[in-house]
Length: 470
Ligand code: GLU
Image (cartoon, rainbow, N blue to C red):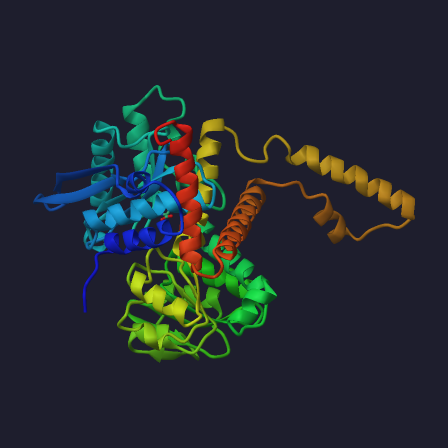
């Protein structure tokens, strides 16, 4: 079977969507092209004194809006092609959810398990130094974030390195997002991608008409969900979906999958993994030796939440889910995605569904630029206003409300409340916008193509307004 690179897959999806638009081919070529790629190699002194050469990249796909934005992944398999593909996805993703950034992505070709924390710190700081040298990082230039294999610790090292080098830059902390809360991070960023996945799926399942089309009842209640990948995104998506009434019947990880038809208790599985280092062997669950077989289980919603190319022409015919909800970037090959569409399976595309991370990164960046925590100015003011309304109500009705009701009613929004509500608004809005485009295209396009049509139109508009393309 022909092996198509990840970048070609992303471009194939782009071309398919572009065919639904009437834009000038040169403009489409400009939107599709990856504008800049910085490839670097630098030496790392290991703890035992030996030297190793580290290879890394940062790709900025589009500067139609500034800064550019996207995570940094630490993975042995990362390469230039992958980083460019992921950077392009970031441009489209930001446009789809109306986050005013261009797209970028970084990669460091390492297996982080092979390095000590001190070595990882040296790699991260040197990588940041290289980005600074070539002007590939800065609050108004390019703002990295966590991705596969990185988290708040790496973001803290990046922020510290950047701000030590650019000492007078007032907005320096806005050079990276996904930082620990006490270092300029924002409450709600850690769970943001998984929470966005939940909001997106919930919204897709809410429409009775759309659910009828795929033979499901509306709502999340009782939907059987399979989660592939139990990292930060997979774990949080599973947690919120279960809280929303769905039943997580299987979870797959690299070393095996667990299956329980009555539903797995997500929190307990996470505790088991923390204790034993694996989800396999979770009490009362059945173990599936081949992790991939979980993808083929009878279920309503399949959530691939690991890496790209999970659903391909090799296994697509055996996928039984009615909804494939792409929490990962690029988990379904372009051809497999077309196959699912033809079979009437609803694919909720990555470019929309996993945009919760970058959306909350946007809120974090705004917080860094404004130098004030969300909710700090208005929380108490709101609470007093609610209290006055409550008093008037109690006087008018001559009834005293219970303590619990009063507490809930007078609660002023704190940072996490505002982040959750901003994310919910963003995801719901983007879903409805995308669904409206799909309807306009008369069912010819799947949701992925519809989302990309929206992205292309918005990016094209920037070029029109800049006066570059007539
Ligand atoms: N790495 C995440 C993504 O692929 C987050 C990017 C960001 O927050 O900038 O969307």
